[in-house]
Picture 1: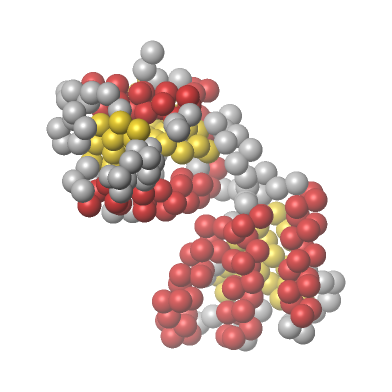
Picture 2 (picture 1 turned 90 degrees about the horizontal axis):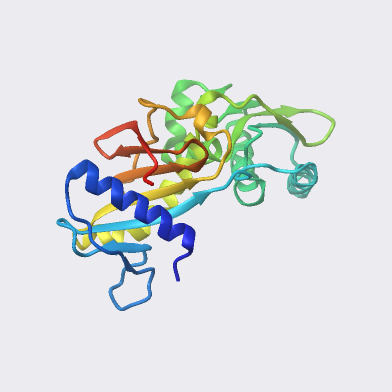
Length: 264
């Protein structure tokens, strides 16, 4: 069953669609796998022409806030990982706003594996700052680019080899592109592409509504800020920032956000 918060966000999006595109949207039909339609997104609007499918997700205020205990536990796990393979010691630079529990650990492990295979001591997966030559990067191929991109999205900045001292974790400065929600948004878009993709194959216009519960979000969003690249299965993106009373809208063919007042 949909939550009150999901219903509220969907209603706001529907009202803005009606105003912006001058269409009658009609009432929502709750989907989310509750019937035999095969649709797993949250809502569809069957009276709209064309029909609309909406998925709602949240970015909480504490979306990425690893505690000291989480950092210590991750360091210990990485230490056990390299010790079990009799590998060297490493310093892992990471962005402070990073999910530790599910993403950073395997991403760091994969980059270390690539570094050992390539016999290099420094590698930045986001910028390819490294001891790698351009020719070697090319020869490492698609799998390396995939793993490097995953590490960048997980918050890995730079990994360097150190001879002693064990595994170290060092937080780095969080640049404006990340604090403007680029990485969290990109992850949300990727997670929701599958459910909206099912609707798109059935002819629905697909929309992702993101309920942004981060207090600092309004400091980094404004007219003209570009959203991350969309999966092809998502046509429209709506960011509801309650604290600012604004909704920011971008679409597949124009990723620059437009700002609207939150519907009353």
